Length: 101
Image (cartoon, rainbow, N blue to C red):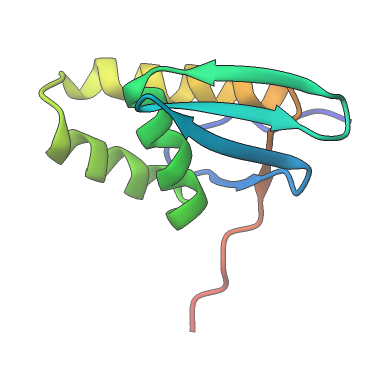
């Protein structure tokens, strides 16, 4: 099965076995199935929680761009690399976008 490339038009879902907690402003994510964990810095933590809230990476990009001073291309690259890393660790997967009514 070929994985679809991740883009800002992708919708991402958090794995149901992934739990996260904030420790000193940064997220620690634990995958209960594989018993592996990952730590995220402040910006990675913000992206993680925005993915939980919105799913659509374009919306995550828009919010982070308003909150942090970063070049758009750099931000896009950082978000896509983080999602790719999370996906390879089994913490997120690409989801079907909600149907438009």
